[in-house]
Image 1 (spheres, rainbow, N blue to C red):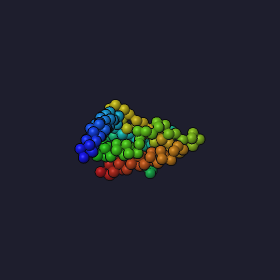
Image 2 (image 1 turned 180 degrees about the vertical axis):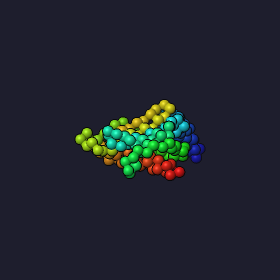
Image 3 (image 1 turned 90 degrees about the horizontal axis):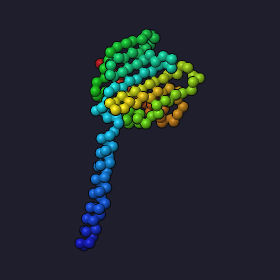
Image 4 (image 1 turned 60 degrees about the horizontal axis):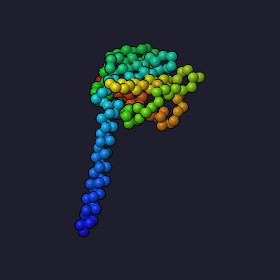
Length: 163
């Protein structure tokens, strides 16, 4: 009976505890050194339109919002997203894997009237900027993730405009 108990104690002290300590150390360093933390968040920016003219723009740092309405008039206004909206967008970008997106996701040059989106998330230590064309023919999951992130940003802008 004593030998079974001593084997269990030996296993716990020699394998399980060092493994758990290593996990805490390793993942603690990963979280501590994460390049994209909301506490270091500066701004999110979205520009979109056709390749030759990106008339629709929003920058959360300056609050400048410009868009083309249904009558082809350019509307300029000052609008701020609240901290909850910015945190939501930060987390949505992380969920969709925005930090791993390629920088340039450009479609074929033959199509001139294709929507182009430039999404920028800026932090104190790093900035991630992605240029995405609506006709980009990359992996389907990547295209879907880009489209979902763009819809989420536009949804938050629409909600803020209604407030």
